[in-house]
Amino acid sequence: MLADGMHDVPRGKLATVVTHLEMTSHVQTTPRALPEGVTFRRVQPDVAWYRDVYKRVGGLDWLWFGRLTVDDDALGAILTDPGTEFYTLSKDGQDHALLELDFRTPGECELMYFGLTASLIGTGCGRALMNEAVAHAWSKPITRFHLRTCTFDSPQALRFYQRSGFTIVKHAIEIADDPRKLGLLPETAAPHVPLLRG
View (cartoon, rainbow, N blue to C red):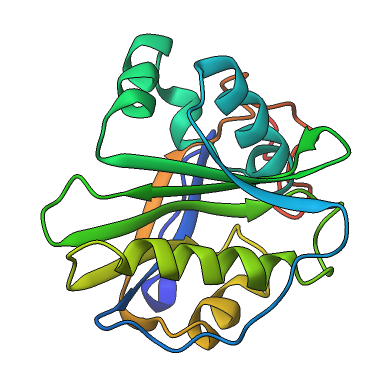
């Protein structure tokens, strides 16, 4: 341990602060229409679709990697589980968002993944997609809607979730292998997260 309570992070590893948030009742949302040409739809994804959208939405910019460590069979089981739901936003024939809801724990919904590609950020699509997330989550018999975000995410993410009605319940430190060092993402991914050489 270093001075002032700090700890070294081993080479090849990443450390991030994870914030857990929850919503325990259905909050009133502010209506937000999607821009012209953007449509919201539910998806029954296959593995190839999911991996493509997952990387474009979160992997390359924000270092999402949890699903990249899962093999195709295990991922396919998640995608076809009746307790999971997947939605996207489409524009010009391409999908630009990932909304993944997990109802597999009775009485709860976890917002597993939520994000947009860079082309939709700043267009109001994030608010519209969150409204859909809240509506679909609370359409089921749940008492808790929860999520996790971390310091690799967009600087606006935490405040966005709080404005959406989620409250912080705890913080944790996660140390994990750097997916860029494992070859799961290119070394150019998430340039705001330093890549330690060696």
